Length: 298
Image (tube, helix red, strand yellow):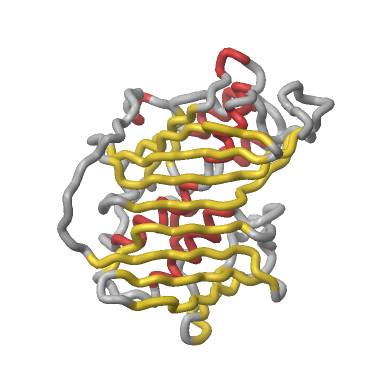
């Protein structure tokens, strides 16, 4: 297990403050704002700590309300909305500086039999082991640019292998522009057999590339003064058990964008083609009209 994954697992081990109140922190490396996947994962951990172990989360619906401050802890308040015979509902609010920065509702369900079908089909893509790592792809993009190679040399908690172009590549080659974005990912370590942990880690990874999928549809990339954006809301459905330390294909698409917002959908498949997670996110995308022809007035 590399140091980045150890740090992530430590971040997910929230500190209990009082009944149904927990405290989380952010990585030592200070970014402009807290990564949305981190807040969602920590909120799900907080909810899970208040639910019986025989019930697993089957859905969550979340709103990113304010940017998180990485320099101060995040307090998670859990509201026990309902404890039924089959379902348990929790409402989680993340607070910094006395204000809510994030809210989530999560529903947990006891395991029970039912009819089963899967209409979704995993896209035909290369095996992950045949694809370069994210760092290797980025090395080719940034070349010898100062600072980037040192940053990319640091370990990452998630091993991500991109099937489609990175946003930086599509921004320089119109032939690579696409509303689809397929990414293999896994946590490269033997993780404990805690089902909630694997769900939480999928929630953490789910926020990495959804906004990128909207940018790919327009040949836009981060790092430009013309582009800014953020996650607005996020929904996930967990269909069946899976392991985050085994390869999962995150098949994403952006069916629409406009009015400074974009919609992205994602499906996570096991290597055997089983659909295990569905994701939908709306994001904020602001682009300078003077610098990009796709921007239209309302």
